[in-house]
Image (cartoon, helix red, strand yellow):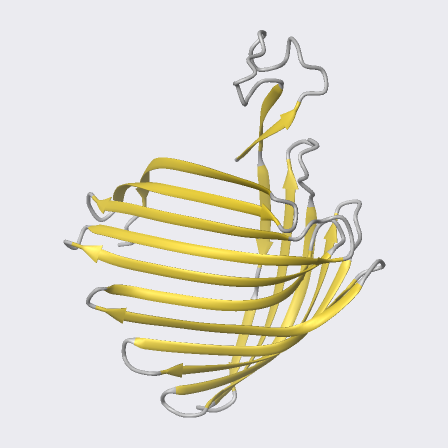
Length: 274
């Protein structure tokens, strides 16, 4: 459920508070709840030709819709795509994978985009505790308004130690948006996870995005997000905990920025399979 705040064109009886307070950030706004519906299908087939060689095929369908139309910048969309891959085990520590893919992105009443890409991925198990992945490729994104292409780069590492599990990832992407624009995006992700006393668990994740729009109406932006969760396992099925989410957004070259924080508590139920 996504709760959005939109401006009221006719402040008055429907606004939050009948007497408008200049210090009240909710004055002249209406709060509405929107339900976001996701439908996804992702069938996957893999065939082992030999002990070292494997071929695979994948189809991906994603539909996103909302219960009602509200002018808050949310756009319904549908995506269809598929890919073919070939994996080769070079050694006990090294794997090499080649993949080609195509997808069609169709936002409602907006420009549709086609995406073609080819990638090569090398994965190395550096040790029992450390894993490294390097991926390079080429992606072309096009619609009736603008075409763009670029090199894809992704570097990822993960290390387990007595102090916890550390992860880091760097990405360079070219992606379409629901407004018909194309965006070149650089991403940096850091993560940390550690368990305590066999019942407690701590997760901390940080992400930073830097996006540049190729044509169209979206502004260039920087975005940072921090997520932290602490949980305690009551038994095999029930877990309680709390979460903190912090977000910061800046529109480059304008001096405009915004931030937000959400703190929540939860009870999580995971049925035990017997």
